[in-house]
Image (cartoon, rainbow, N blue to C red; front, side):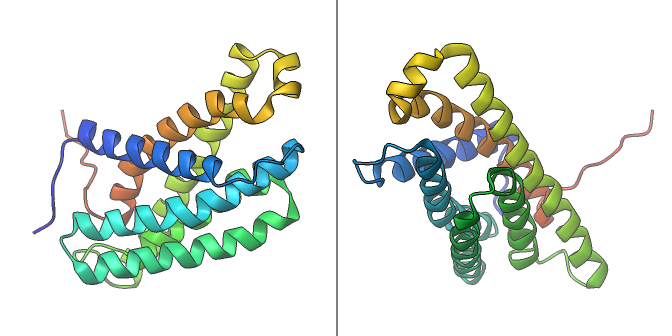
Length: 198
């Protein structure tokens, strides 16, 4: 029997993991980084290694399965390592969009619900996972840019980039992760969207 939570609680769980993962990623950076491009790439790499296994383990935990929790964490770690390597290209649009799509599709396929089996269900999870991942990437990218452009002056961004990224990146990752948790739960097959007839 899977764990069932209301949507607001899933949002809070996603928010919490997003905030924790971003905080760990930022705090693990070396203190001598001055280049904003290197900073963003290294944060992204660390998010891949921290956030992705966390989501995979959470999906298995929702299903009350130690095996799925382990598979999810290992699949997430594998995706995170692949992303770590991909980040070295410094193609930031690909980093912001391709990784979340890889994350969503990979986890949806690896940690699918026990009620979602067969080839058709596999491809359904794959497509839904890509949708969930793309939403994660675009919401994070949009909110990060909105926060940085609205609340932070360009002068302060140039002189205290890392400090200002805490103000923009932390809430952006939290909100994006909250939405992702709702969508990845749907992608994996743990909840179904029903269209009620009027």
